[in-house]
Length: 189
Image (cartoon, rainbow, N blue to C red; front, side):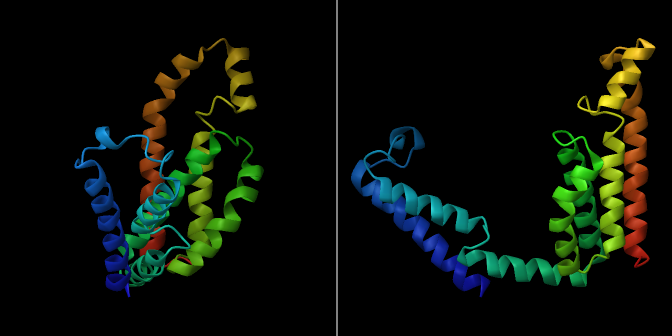
């Protein structure tokens, strides 16, 4: 299935490049800027084919990519551990614009719990990834009102705090990663 979808997508991309080359006699991006104006349907097709090549959900390549990844997670504890670490990273990134941990849980857990069920990752490990990612960012996030109030009350500048907490945060992140790896390796349920 993946090979058939890959063939369709790459064939379509090569047709798009060939079409432009026949009209402009150049394959350089700089020579072909601004084609969306005079050729809107071409630009739409090229975008769809490029996103399909990336495995965007809803395109033909997504099904094959999904089956390959699902099989990898069932077969390899290492890949599942990387997925758990990715969830921890996503939680840390989401915590910057959403400093409320309960608000972050409402936003992310409905997406990550079914994903973890799909790849064979226990829900407990998903919750650990959430707690590690969000909890560690509590030490760093400038949108965290409690952190900023404590720094202001103690007279510590935010830049000084970052220099102090940076190594501590890195050590705690490594410890969290080891904890997630151990949870996946032991099959924590």
